[in-house]
Length: 230
Image (cartoon, rainbow, N blue to C red; front, side, top):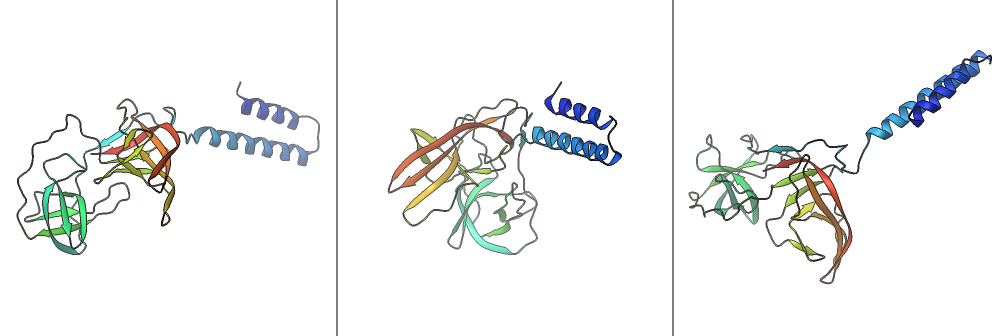
């Protein structure tokens, strides 16, 4: 018998004895509250264990055409985030957007800035130049673009220089990192390339700090992946 069941059984038995009605009612109410509390605690597995996440949802992301304002720009090379024929690295003004997606229903334009994890539709980038020729893919199995982990954080594949932490490449930056000051980053989080595609997928998440060019590992753990966008 589970501890919660045992406690509730004992309290309800006590409530059935010859005690005043108001006391019996109070005992029964308290037993119900204990049972609900223990049940809620048992369901809230926030450690990313397989008991909390049974499988990983893998999504081949394709944005809809946004209805928001349009911008002008160009795409000069393949996406560094998404290894697909329709994904591009583009620029609008002084901002780089990666990935941007070419869609059959758009002519001389792509969709940039879409974020499926945060439900952001992005915007249409009208191209000043035609899309360039693609380079052949060199990847046997590309890393996913974005990961939602069992702790609620969202980790996105960086398209620039990735961090090196304790001798490991950390190509993902996660949303639960804390803001940096002018000379140090006290708490950053990311995911390493050690991604296990099982049921569910499991990622190796690290927390680290960076100060004056020195990077120190704070903690490391394996965590289940809820959703992977490719």
